[in-house]
Image (cartoon, rainbow, N blue to C red; front, side, top):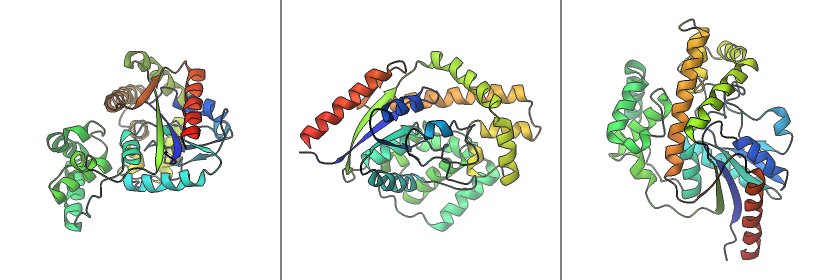
Length: 309
């Protein structure tokens, strides 16, 4: 009998309706919603990163949203530690993981390879390269040495690209090799529910959401964040939407250019997310207009888990 704690995961590309799906499930079961989106951890960008609103958070406890300063760095290992802690706190609640950072979810569900500590001199050298040559140069190298991992990052993501290159230089093996190593089984049972939207259908929804974010105060939010952290190299500023609005605030581009770039980068990110999740074989896919079917599917899985457990 499998007596591991059940955990439901709601995943999919940005803008697909994961938050609404999770809230529908939380209205059926006593639940605790846990974020696994690497951008929604930053507290200074609740609008730009589409974090749940106060009204949405009132439905049930929400964890791991908006707790990190713009200067903060959260590694995959950090995320696993935080997620395990919150899952263990969900004694009488169903943990529902919601997000789109595939690497976080894979590490949590499949385990994290024990990557050795990287020598300080290698880390310093790679970080210096990132500052002098730019994150895009590291990304180009990453595409050569680890094309699989390059699919889940972005040329502007200095934190991830630097970490991947330093691991490769420090161990002689790339991230994909480490992530594919055998690790101990997870102490939890996972049901993965994917919200799938065709990219062409998703694109106008993403464009409309950008307009809605700007109407909700995204530009003022970015200005306040810049007052708090006027360092564009800080990890929080590398997020899509944040970097484009920062370019507008600094006068490098006008607002229309910022919106076009934001939309382009968001679509590219959604495409990478779909590519990542489409490689996984244990996801049960639904469209966003099937909320009742999703809840009933999860209820049946939980009932079966109770019987088997």
